[in-house]
Image (cartoon, rainbow, N blue to C red):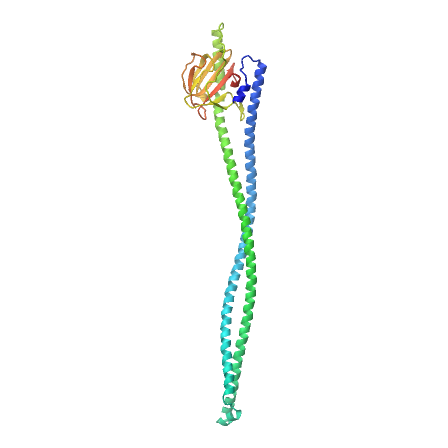
Length: 388
């Protein structure tokens, strides 16, 4: 603000062309700032659209990754159930083999005892059996009985040994199958773990993009909210600008007619600032609307003084301006001071430069305590920096 004020020399003593060049330069600077703000809003909107598109694309990727993960988890569960059943079968076959080994040992011991008894006991000759038999039928039965005992012991031992061998082979086959299924299950588990990591990375990227979009949306919402608040204030000011211009022109015409011989003139020191504060909004186009003065931020209740000597032509409430004071300085020049909490002068009262005329505030269409200061020439608003 100070740099801009330094570039703008007092309007008095300058040619109209010089004043026009200074005003045009100031308007260009303000318009550049407006364009930059508008461009930022467009950039934020475009960035949000790009991030949204990425989120939607990631949504498809996450869904596909989730489907692959579900399929792998189903396959893994199937292999795990198969492996569990094989483990149970292997345990059962192991118990069966142990049992058969025990039975084979018993049968073998029984057969061994039978052989020992045969070789250590007195041999039973068929003739002895024949002679001891009461009849021919008893003889045949006793001979068959001796043969059956030998064959039975041998058959039991042979069958138990065969069952044991068969169970051993079956158990070995089960162990081989179990090993293959365990290997496949391990591979599927590794693929499932990798796919879950892919899904989690995609989901994390999606969450990060969603957070970035939310942050950008918050910035855009704040920008739009500030813009809407300012537009609301400007709409109130523009609604009264025509009425204010007509009042200034009427009062200036009446004052000129009443004192033709002694027209008012600006004091030799020029215009002074009505308050000391920071300029938060300059003169010119902003967001497609004309801001016809400057806003000077000050605390509520700050004394507001006349920028130059003159006559008060407006003192009171005027729509969006709130409590407004307008001073006619003669030669078609007037100044306006808006949004005051209280006015200390009345219409028709003469004031000197630097005299207290109001206390600042935030009345009318205002977003915070400040002084809205305007300079009007023949009723039309001009840039106050040309006179301060």
